[in-house]
Length: 147
Image (cartoon, rainbow, N blue to C red; front, side):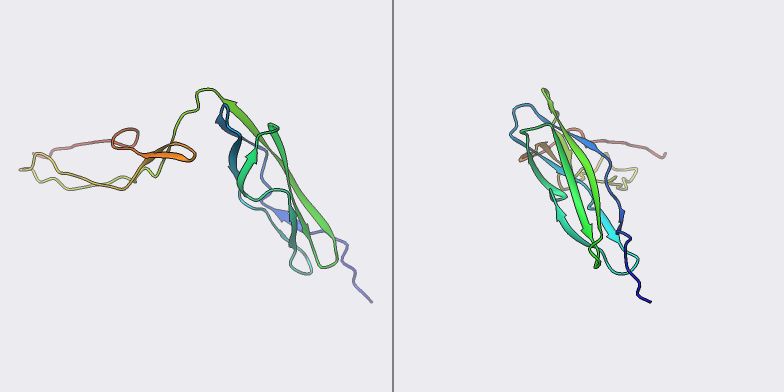
């Protein structure tokens, strides 16, 4: 008796369609997603082809891009994960803030009026144009005094 594999690979993590906002007038925009994976009952399924990498830029010649990841098993059974990335131009594109520090706690003795605290980042700007923020969206202060 010979067993013939006729079942295509099973795909996990195929993304839902999503939208990327970009500044009006841009020629390209970046999009990323977790790469889907596939398994097979008999052997490992391999990624045969993908129309776009999970991290990359898209030229904005159209506002909707179809992305397909094609998997194949050893018996040449094929399974596809297809989803759409939609791009939406925004007139007043807000700057992005990156690398806000986590909460930083410091002890202040009752005899002290305050204490200097330093941290790395954060950065703000549009993709490709980041500036270090000296003060702004990530700066929060709290004080409590025990008498």
